[in-house]
Image (cartoon, rainbow, N blue to C red):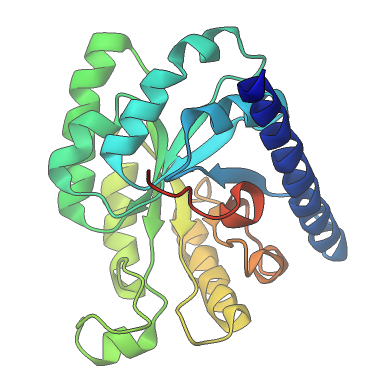
Length: 256
């Protein structure tokens, strides 16, 4: 009985938090007379039971940034997914090592962090094997762009505000590589606003890079940008996908 009460309380908490975020999204989208972006709920560090609850609340897109955790969670909810009205779609949003590509393509609908040719090649190779084995659909790929000019000025050295990603100058070559594959689909761009600078300026810059990308690849219109603290700014500058974690799921669970 105690466990049932705990589950009910968690559902109530998630439902309240989700409603608050959805109202923020709707209000921001209304200001630019645009449809609301796709909401990806980032469930990293949270249990698979939260995925099940959120699925019953109408959420179908979930984000993870570590392959080991994502693969286990996807397997955990696989049986539930078969009966869900909207089976979970997994978006890999973290930095990805090339040697993890074979694992990621087994469960991921998309990868939002493609930032180098080596990774694109690894995903293409992994998809060739996975598609032959299961016939799965092409993997959606977002190119992660580094919007931190300070990092570029320091020749790529890591800094307090650096978030990772390809240089804007490298986007065209990487886009062409992804688009040339029949197993990868160039979905668009992803970025994280640099720490310590206004998000509006970062997302305005991303919108410009996106416009140039679409001039060469009209179908690559996706813009994955915006988290709990800056979703309004991301929507203002054309985000099509939001990655929201803490404002829905709360703080990271304590490790027992």
